[in-house]
Length: 81
Image (cartoon, rainbow, N blue to C red):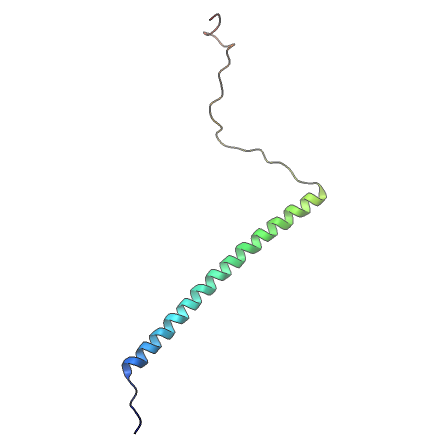
């Protein structure tokens, strides 16, 4: 006589398969994002190399707050001390 299938085991197997499928989907999505980021970085490097070969590299000036400027001693009020 054949043993009857255990419904609990079948359900557990199906749940495990579904979780593995979801995990595979998540990993695939993460890898696709990583590859896209790497492609963008590679494109930027290729552009930089091309500009360097053509001599078209430019230095960008740094923006933003750089601290207070020192006051000039030639201003009013501090002369003669």
